[in-house]
Length: 139
Image (cartoon, rainbow, N blue to C red; front, side, top):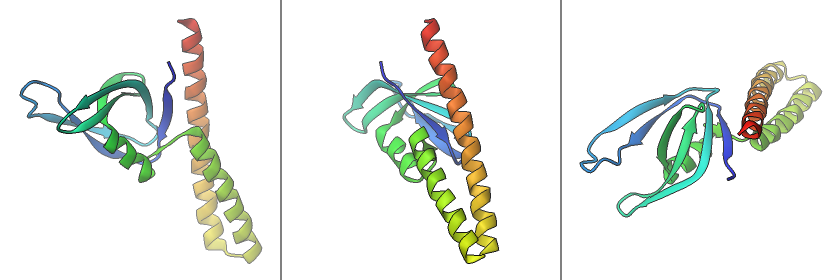
C-alpha cells in the first residue's frame, strides 16, 4: 500500500463531513502549520458530493476528506510534499543569489527568512518520513 505524505505549510480550518445517515452535522478541524497529512488509498464515492479519501493527521486522526478539498489545499500551497519543498528551496536559493547580485537588502532578508523556514519544514518532513519507514519495517 503506497501512501503520500505532506507537511502543512500554512494553518487552515477544514470542515470534516459526516457520513451519518442523517448527515446534517460536521466538525471544524484546525490543521496547523507543521502538521503531517498522510493520504491513503482508501476512497469512497458519494453520488451527491463526489470522491473522498481517507487521510491521517499526525498519525492519529483518521477522517475522509473530499478530493476537491485536498486539491484546493494543495493548490493554495497549504500542503507540500518533500519534492515540493526541495523545488521551493532551490528557487529561493536562486532568489537569494539574485538579491545579493543586485544589492537588494530587503529582498535578501525576506528570501533568506523564507529559505530558513522551508529548510526547517524539509527537515521536519524528512524526520517524519524516516519515522514512518522505521514503523513500517517493524510491522
